[in-house]
Length: 185
Image (cartoon, rainbow, N blue to C red; front, side, top):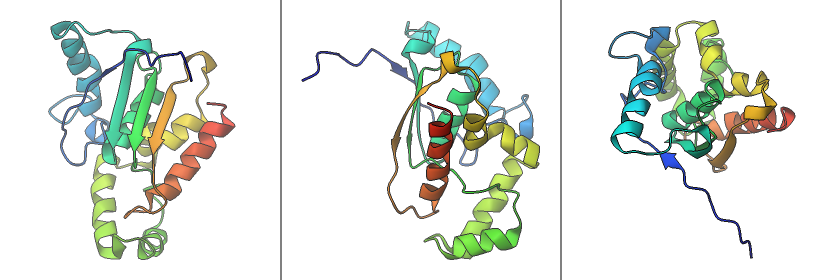
């Protein structure tokens, strides 16, 4: 038996457009699709004032499913001074760059339940959000975990990932988990 208790943590959830990934669309931090900027600069402060909840990293958590899981992981790694933990359920973590060759993606999707046609449509949509390799890597949780430098601000991560995902995201999760392990999270 453990005598410790789980600390009070505020989790704020909101519904976004299907393909937001909690990221500013095409890196634009202005306008109606500036999801990341809006969340960090407007939504979070508004909720904390309106509901008088804790506004310190030790009591702030992020959570998400699939696309939201990607966003939760990415946001915790980009803003570790703001968030002490992130939880992800089947996070949408590709096993390699979204800008890899289409033939590599077709081969990959051929081995998943989503299949090649639906998989390539999804990939096309995600490439609209992150139209360049540089922008994608700036938001890729795997890249962010690999290059994470501040050992004093490492967020704590919680996961729920099965062994078989319709999109094959369990493969990307293993890569992410290895990056965390190598960086001593």
